[in-house]
Length: 148
Image (cartoon, rainbow, N blue to C red):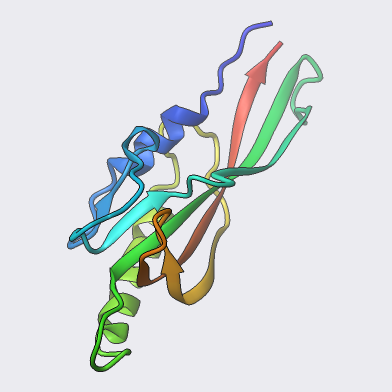
């Protein structure tokens, strides 16, 4: 069996997208705490890859379609004292830029299709060390090809 799919190639392609004011981390750049960093789109350390399915391809039974979802967290800025929602508007602006960048790049390297983009839990999100940020979840459905 020869594999022609590589999840890390797709994650690397996502990390190389250019989004003004947003740093995109690759799967090998995860840290326990973001520290003073802000406006970071990072792979989720838990459940980064979900919904993995492998089925015969429609065009040839000798090949397989591999579908899965890559899950990221967007950390806009640390939640501190003062006006809790002072940065909310800027976060939504950056979120629109993230969605546009993911939607414009229809052929992320390594994928056949990077279809649906879903946003979840807009509001407080935690980094692995328990620090709270304004942010949200970002999920990207991916289709790749497996040669058998």
